[in-house]
Image (cartoon, rainbow, N blue to C red; front, side):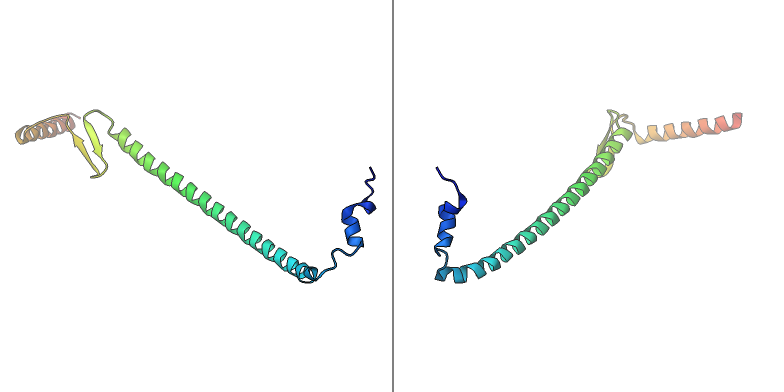
Length: 125
């Protein structure tokens, strides 16, 4: 089998003038224009893809930072009031304590006793 390039069909078609036809007169110049359009579009798509990826990375980073901040606030509130009897209610930003049920009179008596102890302690020094 002879594989000499000069004897191949592709080379010989060009030699015999098979590409010299009316379609080539409009195809060849428009092929260059089409190639430029495709190159411009690919450049535009590459820029837009990079822009979207950069914005997505930035948004992802900001979201992770915000989630971390919210989680830290929740953890701080939980650690600050982490006993069984005090519960933080984030929707109302309040704390519910159920460790002691006393009447107003008992509360006043307890506060008076605390004041008495503080005053007595200061006099003893």
